[in-house]
Image (cartoon, rainbow, N blue to C red; front, side, top):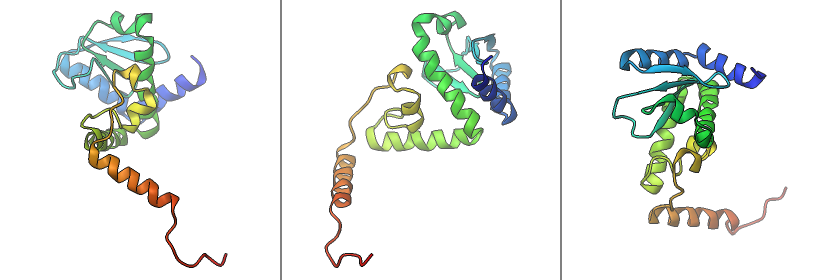
Length: 162
């Protein structure tokens, strides 16, 4: 295994997020299959939440479908998207859950959708994860225009002596 996938996988086991995923598998009777690059695919996940076709915890990508569906080369972009989340877990560990929740809330506040302006989904690739770029809500558009305008026009007054 190349260095980064090995490091990424090791970090998710050390920080406990992959262990949490295996516990979720045990509780929900979800089966595990080896993917590539240290990623495990938990297939046959039966709970209704979350609604997405895939989600990631540590180095484990969960799907309600068979593992072959996700590992099919036609879904390489989706698997790559989920693997980017594995890297996010490697860096942030359990803090990822709080950060992701905050980013989802921010996105919902700005657009009415949890993924569109979510930093983690954007970093993993919106389209590859099945998310769409949505416009800002009218209040957010006005706010960002106002902020951009004030940033480009310094306040009147005496220039700094430096």
